[in-house]
Length: 526
Image (tube, rainbow, N blue to C red):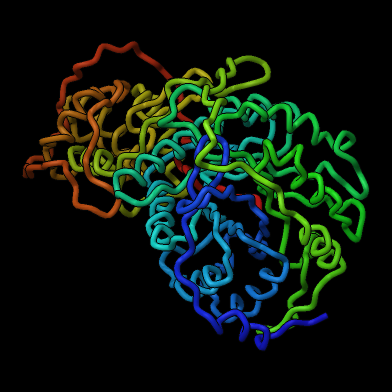
């Protein structure tokens, strides 16, 4: 069976008004202007990335014109994208989706900018990437929200990475409020890993509502072939989330151990028992690729051929109409947050404190105040060796991070170059600004300083000269606004001499291994 652009005629024949935004009340999604509960009948809509290269599915109007009518035939009301180019024009695709009654949940990362489970960090370049996606997609009423991470922690050994994802959730929720955008959720998509399954869900929904997820996506592939509600474990998962305080849904599903896929789980997912707890799901995936999960196979830019899975999924999703809850008469009872998991042999992320907020202004201000910085012509491939050297001479706790102990340097959220500047300058000051203390065989250099004033001055005092103090003063600037941190320029080659207003212990590390070098550079599972 083939579809072409001819099918688009029925879609664009009658332009629809902007879709009614979806809102969250308690553990359920609702249409904002009426009392109807919203259940996701979703499709993952993105081709797999090739290394760091990916195709933004919302920037290709021709492909959207080809695919939207087909997804509409499948009764799709939401798609998930895994990476978009925030600088691209998405208006044509978003309009087509809106006219078809289709909403969007998008991941904030991309293949080259994400939280890397093997070397996790939350820092300013990631902050800029994530906020740029929010800025771009916030203009469309059919944007439901965002995933701040996808399967980042997938073992006990990588569970510490969840602290950095949760910090991203916190900062993105705050950013949306600061910008005055309409309500959009920030959530997380987790892998179904038994060793950390419950701790993950508890961790992201504990401590403070300002930093907890707004919805929980579950990538689950346990129902294979003609399985059952109990054999698949769906019954256990449903009971585990019955009292969860935010909406939960399948962010990916569709086991292909048995092919063609039967999709009998669709009937269960949208049936009365599961619909009391789950808000539907997003089937993986639209495009047929070597992983053999596709509903359609692309023929050319204007047509596709449907796979056997398409027919089976279409059959079951056609009758997916749960009764739902009336918003007006719904009073959430499961409002309590979860109890945070404790650090131990089965969990490595301390609940509090989280990594510091990624503050671009503070990092730039600290760098401007430094009199000794990394040489501009030093290749980034040599940063690791320089980190190791300088942090063998001075305590680098100000840029260190440890999610298991909950110890984070005030500047651990800065870029690698800025972190190096902090370490180099700290050693330089400790050596009375001796010229030989800012050489490192030409890897470092002195520069004129810019003294911190205003908000930045207060923040740097809180961080202290060691950089291990807790910064509580908040900057008022947002990602695309002018800085609120005042500065005044000095022509001297001196370094920052702010005295700490916080008492802290020494956290000595013999050799800093420069994990900051790879800050934020990782892969997301597409």
